[in-house]
Length: 126
Image 1 (cartoon, rainbow, N blue to C red):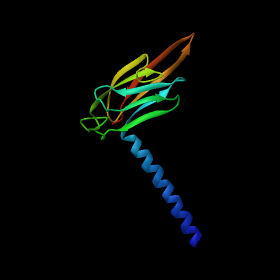
Image 2: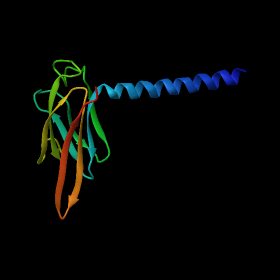
Image 3: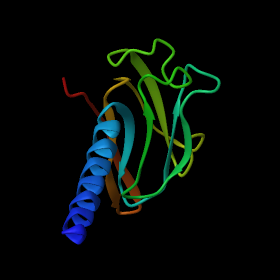
Image 4: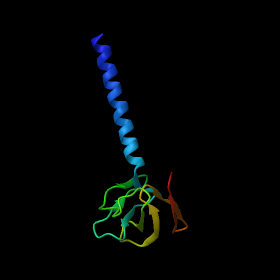
């Protein structure tokens, strides 16, 4: 009986932890790197805003929308502007997009014939 309770408690702990981590990410704005090259992203209107100099392929960088270092208004639907560069945030320009602080920016594309065909798409779920 004691082992069953321990197993149930452990299972509930991991389910709760997974739910917490999933919910927390929903309320962050993120830059997703769906390319096969290194990128960087920076919130351009704040000196100490979100800045992730290197986002490897398949990875993401996020900042919670209520973090005033990333979003000075602190509202989920506030607008923030992100600059994305190739290799680093200050690298050759890929895009500059305005997104909502509770949204996401997806960078996708691949190299073709020695040139990069990269695009940025902003999205926001109500």
